[in-house]
Length: 225
Image (cartoon, rainbow, N blue to C red; front, top):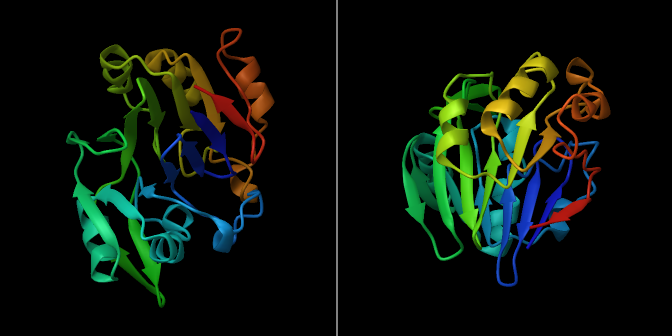
């Protein structure tokens, strides 16, 4: 199984039979290596409704007939737009044919901007994806919160994608504590350098983690699980 990073919070998981995309913000993402019209995805997993996370979900899902899994209000909104959706909520899990998805808390906001109006899209979340015997945690956009200790204790996380950008999410200092609590085998920083206000040096963050734990992935770079 190949897990790759594509700038901002975009993560792709590729198995022999399925391609799964987290938060496919591609158009307008100057850091990504992807081209929205060329992306193929069987499943799209969304952490929350902000435009820089929903991104190109509409076009990708329609072109590929993708299943979109998202928090309830966001999923309902996307369903009204004609997408194939599966609504979930924080604390809930569901076994799909590609793996198990569980939504975790995230301390942030969630609203989609359309035609100059904000549409409320429910509570934001993190996502635990259990697939082919591995656990991938995408924290979404979140502040540090103490229940990350429980997430780490209850799940043997193979790779955790953690925001470090600050301003809108936790910054590097809090992300270091999050990494400690999550106790993942590998920690990958996300949600940084897309905009000036979230500029960070990921190498400094990774260098502050215990040896061998952190890994900076350049857009398009992958790890094997």
